[in-house]
Image (cartoon, rainbow, N blue to C red; front, side, top):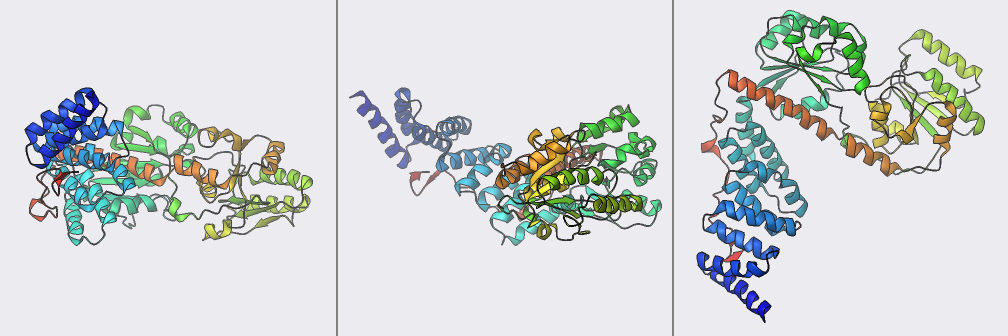
Length: 499
């Protein structure tokens, strides 16, 4: 009998709410909640009523509790986001956008209103992220492109300089990501004077590879924020010892802790002279074709052929594998960088009688296509920052078999590492072969979006410093008259019913 009476309170509350008698409706549903405090739908409805009464903070409390009890409810998530936006809590709303997308309820209107809140608060970084997401949801919003262009003009200008002119592959995705958020350029220059002129017109200069270009740039009078990204080989050269690190705002390292140790060996006090951050490279899974291939006998080794890559040891491993099973084949994709190494490798292939099972296919423009008939991605390198070729091979579905170089266990699961040739053969011949798992490992641990997000965080942190130093009002983006956002509904009630 008590339960029936209690349910009557709830039903009566809904009827009063639909009639616009919110205060009476609130009292009635609260009476229901007194004996049924974990009724998610009643909590949601109470939040809607509180919102209509202008008691948004209390509404958010009820929506949040309801979501904790019934997190898969689209209506609860929607109402919570609406309440967040109405109270200027766009950051909290943004945290729920992935849930909304998964539920199929994320739309351009919600995103555009969130962007307006961010702009009103001077948060240009999250505003532009939200506008870009809105364009993904609904591409035919020409006005958003104009808004983004206006916001970009109010953000720092970024110049990218590449210390290895012919090796911009690690910069491509970063540049593409950044150009949608800032005004960027990747200038060509003939000498340090021309580079300096570009730096003068930029707010942030990004130097890819810590080479002699960084050494020279660091000695110039400081005219902008400077970021240097060091990969691996630079840590073992003397360039870091020559850099005026006090003129570098952020040093990004890519590799494992052994690369950092090598850097600190050269410049022991570097962390007192600049900010040091480690951001692993991300793998662009969209560019790598996954094949759920069966276990086979074709081994792939991708990358330049030099002493560090240690093809000599790989051939010893291959000789032992060939002795056990002559059907296995090894394919190299890359070019030799050392004539003496090439002479030795080709000689020992003949001496070990491997000419019919070891092949040198040269540089591959289309690695996806080349890997299609391969089954293992192998490496005997003595040192890597990450081993991007290995991660990309895994993303395509190849099983990795990796010599245990310093720091390898920080990047790859130990089950894929080997110390001696016997272990190499055991891993190749193991019946364990799970292409989807290899791809999933890369997706979970090294997605490109994680790398780009961390880099963007550095840009926004420097942006805040630049705004502060220039006494720039971060909210002054001049967009209020161009907002494409529709008028916010007066209530969470729609069509005379609680959403």
